Image 1: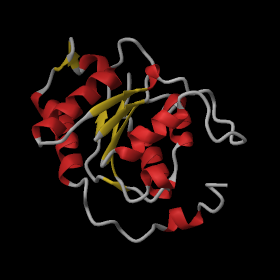
Image 2: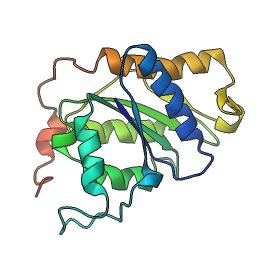
Image 3: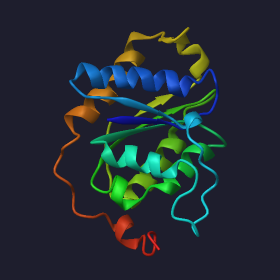
Image 4: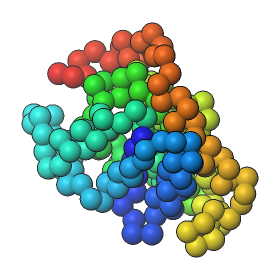
Length: 187
């Protein structure tokens, strides 16, 4: 399982939360890897080129995973542009029929719209998105150093990792309406 961190900040609450997700996945017997987008050279996607920068490596890592967790800070009510750009390099081959978990953190109010937007993107790629998702509002008060301050929140975050391992090989659903309407996405 891989967790993709859609934050470039040095002290990223998204990254800290994903580390707890990965701890939950490891406890459930999963092999884990954090995909830190700070370590990838991913210029804005230019669809005229098959590969740019480190895009082939990103695609290889995501494609090789049994499950993917997408983690994002909330910017203007949605997920980060960094994560959007990384997802643009991937497609049906990497996400089709794959289990995906979602996590969003916000400095302020509840980050539900970012999760809804990511869920729609993943459905259009014919992923199986876990019903359990994690939203962490007022994130700076949710951490004590690198640790999650609340037992309840820590349990919810780690459960996301456990669920990704448990459902990594779930029988795929028939293609979604959204994925069938995504004509020309691989052109």
